[in-house]
Length: 82
Image (cartoon, rainbow, N blue to C red; front, side, top):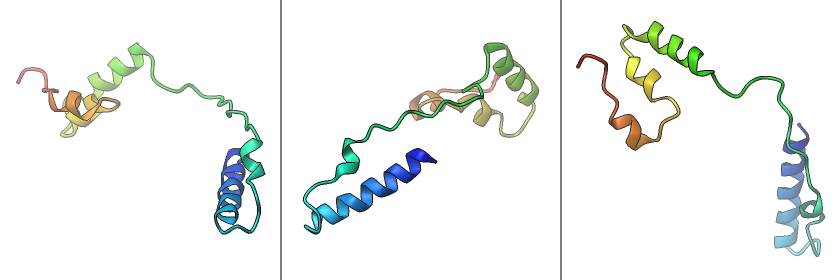
């Protein structure tokens, strides 16, 4: 929430600077801390394997395999056995 409020304020003040209403954007001087999340950012290797194993017979299996890949990597993905 703090990051969002800071971004809105910084953008509003920047618009005021462009319109020459204020001389400078003081919100640019503020450093906002990065939020600390209480959850993991991704799956473990074993969890990822289990997801792929469970989705193996699904119609959208390639989508599960390509999650997190760059588009060039995803194009090269083939279903096992094909």
